Amino acid sequence: MQHPYTRLPARSFWRAAVAEPDALDITDLWTPKFTIGQDAAVVTAGSCFAAHIGRALLEEGMHWYDAELPPPGLTRAEQSARGYRRFSFRTGNIYTAAALRQWIAWALDEEKPPEEVWTEESTDEVTRRPTFHDPYRPTVEPDGFASPDDLLRSRDRTLAAVRTALTKADVLVFTLGLTETWHDTRTGTVLPMCPGTVRGTFDPTRHVLRNHTVAQVHHDLTSVLALARAVNPRLRMVLTVSPVPLTATATGRHALVATTHSKSVLRAAAGQLADERDDVDYFPSYEIITGFPYRAAFYESNLRTVTPDGVAFVMRHFFQALQGRPVAAGRGPEPITAITPVAGGEDHWCDDAVLDYYNPRPIPSAG
Image (cartoon, rainbow, N blue to C red; front, side, top):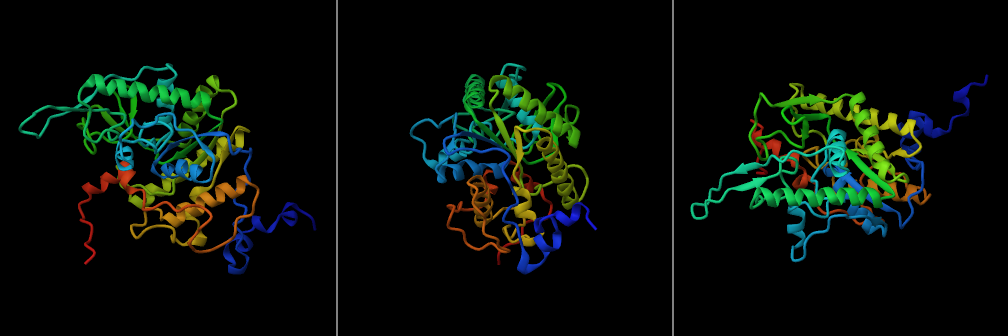
């Protein structure tokens, strides 16, 4: 008897492709929809997990396009602390599709960003000079800006970098991180973090939590493409979903349930858009890290931070699939030498990691 299932390859069956130890087949998780050449300009943005991608592209000899270079004289640590060389522009983490759409709309003058700044009074008894922080990039200048004008000029430079990156890029790689988003109802904007956690002051009459749906995420990503392709018709997009769980949820749900919900929404929206459009692809970094075969082996002991070997394993799949080479199968996080491992976890550049500070249960000591 003939039917569609009789002609499927082994990779289509769970037992043959995943469950059987001797038949594990994750060598072809991703078949790229379009080529990304060695010299193609690749722009990266997204959640903290996305910060690994630009560096990995450089290590592989590909063209990661950094549109907002750091000023001379900064050490590598100072560059990182001030948000340089993480993504292709100094926006800081962009966790949601709504925030990406907002940055692009501002950069292309489709919308005007608010000029509001957050003022922080000085604790220095000598200078007593306040510092100023950007509500939409609260962590990119750890010591704050010296004046509101300095802040707005810096933001204008970032918006110019976003505009340049979009016009120059061949591919935009965007990593979706969250669905929980804090909206400012007074300005009609989305914020990267809840005010009062990193910077700013929380106002319950103004700051509202919204948990975006598949339809909303899909709509925002579609808007991103429409805006970007209006200035660069050749632009293509690769979407990924961050495997890093939520540090905390404000929905009232258990953190595990909230994380599963959020990642499911993002995965569904990304997959739907990739199925609909020839200029959008989905790369399964989320599945590689969280999939059943690896039994959370690619996470640090906090079950949140992805290990350096996990990051390298993801990027090996990415590059070898692009090159049409088979990826060696494997069930555990064996050391990987083909791709330079990334030292340390990413919590130090995850803005939302600060939320664990408000955890009523202290972190146990190592002793």
